Amino acid sequence: MEINDVEEEEFEFSRNYFLAKELGGSSKKSGRKFSYTDPVDEQELRTAAINLEPKHEREVASLMERYKASYPDWVFMLRSGFGFLMYGFGSKKALIEDFASTSLTEYSVVVINGYIQSINLKQVVVAIAEVWWDQIKAKRRNSPSQAQKPFNSRSIDDLLVNNIDGPSFREPESQLLLARIASCTHIRIIASIDHVNAPLLCDKKMVHTQFNWYWYHVPTFAPYMVEGVFFPLILAQSAKTAAIVLQSLTPNAQGVFRVLAQYQLSHPDEEGMPIESLYAASRERFLVSSQVTLNSHLTEFKDHELIKTRRNTDGQDCVYIPLANDGLEKLLAEINP
Image (cartoon, rainbow, N blue to C red; front, side):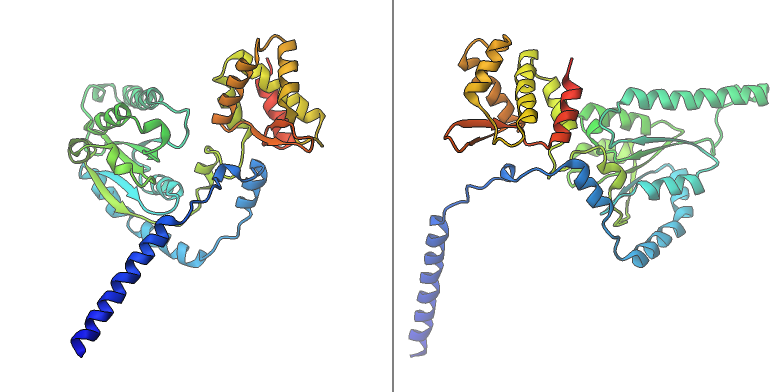
């Protein structure tokens, strides 16, 4: 009797399992997309983020004091030939710079902010060369007889790299050059990473031989206030990012977009510009020669999420730019010749 009960339970379990799989496989996927959400003004969103009240301030302050107590150990690791790589949740910019300003005062320090997308490795090398040249000139002025002698053990240049996994340093060539700089005798790199895949940027030789990283887990739980300024917010359609995209397009495409933007500003109560009207206005300005040409421009705009389409009350297909009027005016000012 007990055996039959066990068999019935196993049968019921198997039956429920396959029923659940069948129901799960037949469920329809949602057609909603994140791009369908209404964009928020970027400045408004950034202001709201700044005004967020910090939490657990006492615990975070206690954590920072623990890190500061480790500063002498960090200096010892640097003088022993290791590079210093900080990882963990939260911005580490303030911690790294505080460490440099309090414990590395005897050394020359170069700060590189990897979160700035416009930075390049040429600027890094030039900054290091300028520091060395200033040291040589200072030694010649103070003691000419000592100018030709090599650096002593305390003559170390520290290169602080906030976000060594930043957009400008993610190419293999960039990491290779940074590794070669780190392998120089008198250079130590103190860096931070935040991207989950940052360790994949370096191979085994770079990590253990050239960078010679000493990994240190330092979660600060600090907001990325400074770093976030240089990245577009995911919920905001930024006029700045739209301008960057438009600058990569052809002059005629920019002209079509300008026509649409001007129409939207002059007709704020309408649901968008009818495609037929956009074609007529663009053809009149010799921006397009056919409907096919206009459609190719509109497709390009859609791919870059510069425009959206909808149908107005008259049943006409319209296009519109998902930006507030203030942002649209700024965008026009940037792309106007």
